[in-house]
Image (cartoon, rainbow, N blue to C red):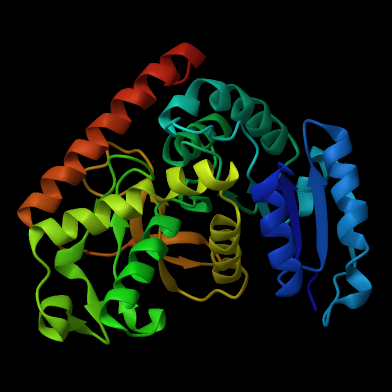
Length: 313
């Protein structure tokens, strides 16, 4: 049986939330940790190794490593970067995190890595696109977490409103993982039934209020506890599982679709062993489409500015 190996780059709160979740779900057999602060990688390797004897299905090992370890990895997960501070938007992180991803991209590319990259560093859509351009990897094999977490939040609020299991709700947030995101209420369903027919149509004011709650959720959590990490850690676990098990599941990730100016933005796509294979044909209403186009234009402007600074086409 083939050994499943992951290299985690970035051992902060998000990275370790992903790591612990993956270990408990038996996603990988081998875990290699890399961090700009060597002590963080070494310390977390020791700490999580102490959990191995108590796991139901323990991995072979968790260890500190280097970019050379990427050469035979199935998946590289990147969570490295400066975290959001209270009141700070994800876009405001772009300058600092673009420099960080440049070093990471060089290290991963030069290792000879041929697997799938999964990225959660913010602003994730811009960072994912930059990493893909810097490495020259096939865009389909570079997956940003996109609006996976935003969509989970929307689904959770809808299930609370309509008093159903979140497993019965299907609703997507598209565009930027950030302030210009778009909640697609027009295509949302519960048990395959359109929202309006299931439990009464939501008014525009109700939709706007719920979307604002989704969009502001990270700010709320950061103000309360300084960082968000469990939700995105679980989202990364789900993306990796879809890749490893060739699930062909639809997830809202950073991918290229119509109207994204060739940038990887949040949109539902089929995820399997080859990465994101194809975006789905999600129909937006007129207002949602206008908001999505606006979001894409804003991301294009930000990307062009940072790419020019870094000398990337």
